[in-house]
Length: 127
Image 1 (tube, one colour):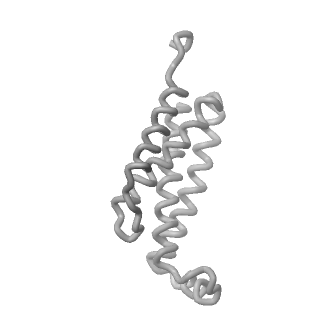
Image 2: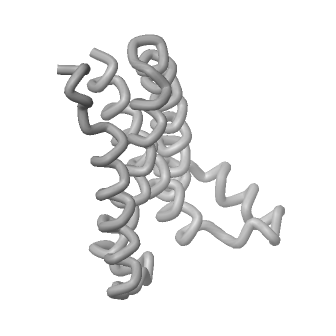
């Protein structure tokens, strides 16, 4: 059950980051507080995406707390690195994010994944 809660937390926090990024691209610059506030009060699709992202973030924290209750921190915490890979991979597919593919970033992602596997791989005594 701990693994499922941790995975839900990773998926929700990744969705939250993507929703909030999309919303902030669409909304007026936050450096113009009056324009930003006026846009927020319209409840347009970007505002709804921002609210959905914040809600997903809150639910991800709830799932994270449940995961921490059920599994060792040394196993749970490294799973958060999956969100970096998910967000970058999905951001590559969304044109408005203007995310660039670089082989160095892919190599870094592969290193993160390899490190994650080394950390969570069960020891012989865990089996």
